[in-house]
Amino acid sequence: MSLPDGVTTFGATIPDVPRTEPVTFGALPVCSIGSGAVEVTAVSVHAGSGIVVNAFGVDADLADGFGMDFVDLSAAGFDSTAHTLEAPCGTPGELAVELERTSVGTGTAEGFDVSYRTSAGDTEDLHLPFIVVLCAPEDSRTQDC
Image (cartoon, rainbow, N blue to C red; front, side, top):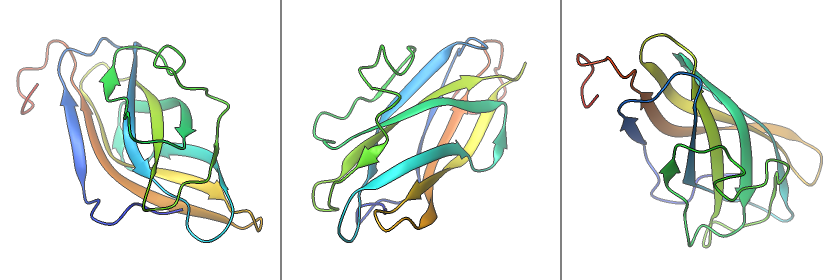
């Protein structure tokens, strides 16, 4: 599993995120490398605080990339049991994650760790450099909140 060529650090700051409400992000580009499919087994916050990953799913077609909305993964049109991806890097697939701000204050994630299993049975990890800030409604000090 890999990131398509040219993908560097990217992110989003979302103001006024109610605590414990789902926020789903899609259009996170990923691709399988080599032959065969990969199975995404886990997605977790790389570093940060106050944000958890509640669910994730993959889609082999990034063309219509979901974006972001204050809905859970299924309402965003993703299947939380769809974890197998076979998408070459020339036509990447889409990873979607349902996040939740769990802290009283603003939550941050300095990227995500994606664990996966190859068709050969090997387990590996991929760092997704997607920085997320989920702003508490009362936060006026954090930039862009």
